[in-house]
Length: 250
Image (cartoon, rainbow, N blue to C red):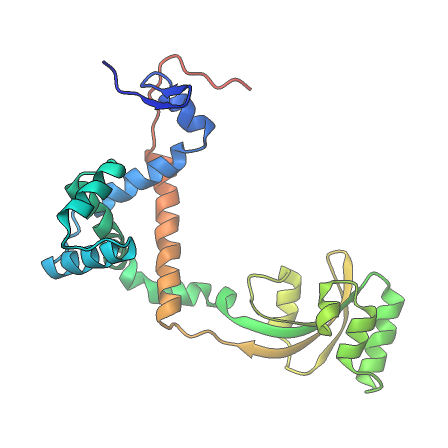
């Protein structure tokens, strides 16, 4: 008898499982998990790590780690063996070790490469589609007649009007590239002349430039980025289909 899964009136069988996975957009996530499992399979964990991870897991799901019957009931309900559960519990630990072993020595150089995008800025902005109005507002600001925030609330045509034109802190990867080019060369507090950015005429003032240090949180983020780049490449290059008769109809 072939294995199957029945959900209501629907039965998943070896014959239709690929079509089901494709329809539910689960092929890429499944491939991702298999690739990770293969990559971390040889990563060791100490007995202390295993004991701590299992204790924390059982506490999180409200089970006494010493109650074997509770554990057995939970395993049966979730269709897992004890060995499979241990692998599941240790998976995050092995994955973090894999990231560190594979890319730990590259983080600093990757940080320097990405720093121009990771640094953050706080800036004020007035945007309009009226060049004449932009020029008038710029002169009024330069002559000290008006407050930037008040003019932004009154005239700016974007959501920044609600904050008096103030935006940030935001990473330099967020604003429009042409706007970023202006901000990275600007002096804090100096109002920049009206300039066209995409469909808008904008008046800018850099409030603060924030250089982001390579702390523990950022290091973890960059490790995750390197891992995700590797994983996406793996999915693109190592996943193969062998499905005689299967055709994609456009």
